[in-house]
Image: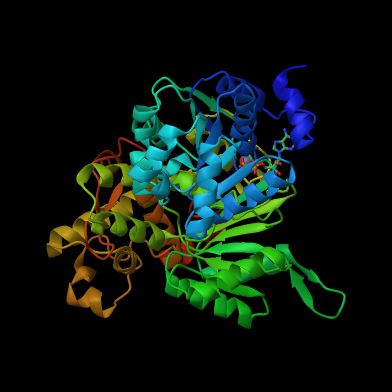
Length: 535
Ligand code: ADP
Ligand code: ZN
């Protein structure tokens, strides 16, 4: 039996390694650098805790764990202490006397593991202290925080390359639960892990059922979803609901949604960075401790929150990327039991995200990467194929249709939408040509449907040849078509405008009839009105 396995049993009381744990642990214990990509709940902690203990026993010194999450540090240290491991943390919650005591223990070589926040680690004083201590390894948890493109970006993480410069002989293990190809490269590059071995576990979360619905009235759709799938009689004449997380983009929407859900009998609480710290803390605690709380939150909520029985994660707004979507939905079903990832998505979301990218202060490269990340997410939203297959392939993992996502369970009808696409595209073109400005999907839809609105009259768009050619479809169907044309890269959203649409270069071939377009819309029932419009 290997030392690693013996220690696994002796200290942690587990009898076998999971997945790649063994390879990772032996690699790091042997002094190698590595990058570990493992989904949430996969067992990353052991991948540095065990090698730290092995190296300590071999006379190498303490394992230093860099973590941005204070609550997580405290939990881990408490759990390790219970197992008889000499673990401690240094962060802003300690008094200076307590911190000094831990620093002395570090220098005396008494600690097996020391958790430290990055900003503290990087102080010249602390780095000087480390010079005088014996160090067995560095673990860099939540390594994706080094990525400028992600929403968990922490500037201090970039400076962590100093560990390699100052302690070239100490092995380093970086870990994250989310990293697409771009983020992986960035972690490797920024943390100087060029020679590190990369261990990638399967990112599949088979118990999560993915569903992306077309946004109509998102709130009502959400309520119907929660009631239908996550509510049951409580035996006392009422209804109880499962614990879940609802993500919204803005703080205001978080508050409004939480209030509204509460008024509908759901135990919903808001969470966002703008709330009073006490309220935020209390809502989080209630979510963790009580049954059946639905937390409505911005993405400020989530990293490091370990609640195994979250039965659903719902998105009322589009995340920024597939990574964000994966990470946020990944908070559901950590206990392995069935869970839902539900999202409502519409053209407005695409316009909003594109505008946020355009309006940001980021440089051109950053904007381009952000736009590409958004496009990959739109591809996931619009796919008629298996969502899971698409999601996993984004992380470089091959798989098969899963049978546990909406598109597998109810394959969406697709149809040749070339004619509809041509109508929409030529309407965009003619309206802009006639008026010298670009218009948004709502107005374009009015033109296509032959609606004599005030705006249509004002611009004399009833004179356009495309006026009224699309009366057979409802307004929401046309919005769905415009959304797909944007997602397919045939239309672009005007920079800095209010969702005005313009032709993308690829639209030419469609207008000329050289390329056909497959659409998920309209569903068969949508063609019903055609005879009426013609008559
Ligand atoms: P992550 O950090 O990847 O989200 P954790 O390290 O918190 O995951 O591990 C998730 C859970 O799995 C923990 O409860 C942990 O104790 C357990 N676990 C990890 N490795 C093993 C193993 N080899 N055998 C049994 N349980 C394990
Ligand atoms: Zn599927």
